[in-house]
Image (tube, rainbow, N blue to C red; front, side, top):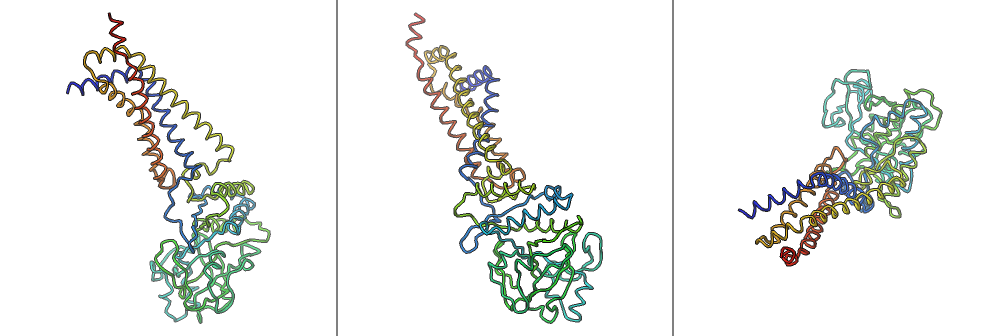
Length: 446
């Protein structure tokens, strides 16, 4: 018990004696370890691949994100030109063959007016065509202002890449092409394709309005799928989705003509943003994700809009996605300088502390105190100095709403660095205390 009391008292005496320096080193170590972990994550690509990444034909696809905060996008849409810049940037990414972006959502129903549906279904039973979550007509909004009875029809949204990748076959009419997905005016009809069970309900060329969020899209049926066509549920992996009772609504509408009305173009900004939420990019073979991220960022700068991010990248790439390569290098240099200065400061503090107390420790040892008891007090002091680094790393690197992911590997790296520093500190203290010469102190006393 006396030994424990001695160790605690010696720790408190030593810690209080250099309290300000210890607190300063605590702060510096905390910042240094966090920044070093982030920069290592950036350059070593330490990552946690998120659950919404997927594999198609043994190729990995990374989830793209165009900001979860739609306001960041729509703040650039106060003018027609700003809206077109957002749309053109999205199309630049989606249509780049090198990126191979697939966008699809197989569980987004198409909302139509009951009156419009009854025009085509007539007396036919349409329950099999309704979304499983709302298998009956329901009162609701149709667009931003119109209310009434609406139907939620089963639907899938796909971009042209996804449509072509899964080889959907058409029995009547035509499938999606770059030409028919290009419209001259925002008021032009959007092409849709219907499942085989719609035969006798819709004919090629029939028109119907479909609501998505607060926007209404005029649509025209351009094709009817062959019976038994399917789309794989590549995200939730719950099996194939048979499309006989489904509509296919296209992601990726190009506008080739001049647009003058802001209100007309807004819905296509929304639809492009919505497309990005369901987009996956094939992992590049000849480029690192760093290079692709900067390409996405450079293209965004050309259009003057926020950049698309790759959710599958490391924590460092996610946090620094808006920084230029030169800025990241400067941050890296500053991080290295801070870490080196912190280590130097810590070594100097403990060196001075032991040198100042060398005679005191010698007296302790001449009176029967073991070197181990002195060492333990320093081990505790080193642990206390490093403790804020552990707590802050544990808090910051597990806050999903702060980082947008679950970067367990980066947290593990931070722990390894802190543990390594603790071990180095132990060896350093042992080395310094081994230099205590009790015989020399006895001779001085004589």
